Amino acid sequence: MLAAAVLGAIATTLDAGPVLGDLTSSSVRIWLRTATPAKVVLHVTDDSGMSLAVPAETRAQHDNTVTLHVDGLPSDARCTYTIDGTAHEDWWFRTRPEHDTACRIAFGSCANEQEGSASVWNRMNALDISALVLLGDTPYIDTTDLATQRARHRTFATVPAFARLVAHTPLYATWDDHDFGLNDTDGRLEGKENSRRAFDEYRPNPTCGEHGQGIYTSFRQGPVEVFLLDTRWFARTQAEDEPPTLLGASQWAWLERSLRGSTAPFKVLACGMVFNGAVRPGKTDCWGAYPAEYARLIDLLARTETTGAVLVSGDVHWSRAIRHDTSDTLGTDLIEFVTSPIHEHLIKAADAPHPGLVFSAGEVNSFLVIEARQDGDSASLTA
Image (cartoon, rainbow, N blue to C red; front, side, top):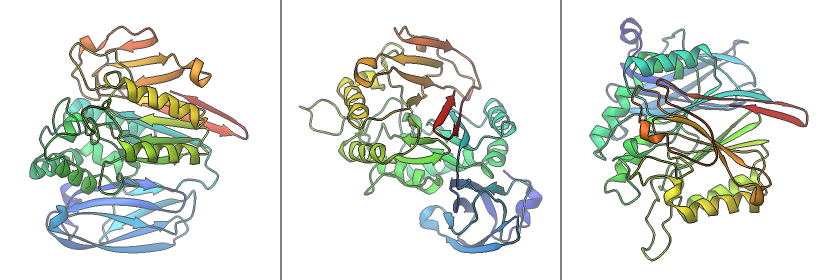
């Protein structure tokens, strides 16, 4: 949480946030929570002195959270912001350049509120990342009870190192099993609507699924478009006599539209569960347990003629790089980066054999950085 003296100066008793959300060349989303329902005013000032004021109101029905939208900002401008007239040294951001050619995006999964995870947030801050993507189990909740969901998100948001980082670094997120509601679970989980409600209240993503279903979304920075998949909400929710679905019809349709419309040189498909079947014995929540869905994903990439695809996953408490044998279908092998854990709990059994294994390491407090740059018709990506 921010320093008590700063919080005490805010008339609206801000008790979580602010958290930077989706950031573009002309807009930003900023999330916050007040201790009680309140009216708040966000002021954003750019380096030329231009100021925009956005009023909002937090309400009990949304757990006193609100996401404010600011439009009409100049591109590539350093902006500071205040909440009800109060400023803080971490309350700033830089809008994306109109000609956006570079990014440094951090991905991580499996975090808690302990010092080890805090060390990761501090390291990310020192690296001056342009975005943070949480892949799930961030936080650990393990129930769909709405009050507990909200309380766990609230506690996670107030870790000082995390709060400092996301006050000026845009945060994007999906969920995995423990923040969806239960270990190794799927879309048949009772009460998942509560999990989605809390996620939508506490995560300032660009969008949150469609038609009140799922939480999938996407964003772009520089030459990279990130597609955050939801591999929990729709999993195994279709008729039992069909091959089990993972993404569900609406998410598949969204992903196809989005891939066809993307002009990014690199497309990062990211989710909590791994895109392969090399997992510890008995683990059933991985793409390897949904072979028809995995084949559909590869077919979709081929049909849409998607180039520059990269897979990113987490969950397994082990970090790996895996080469997928897709050259016959896609003309190149897909590379998957598995990044886990941000906390200290390793699972040695996750170091399972895979014919395409390139790298495998059990390293605590770990995360992935993808750095990409575009120069004219040439683009490069390093992970």
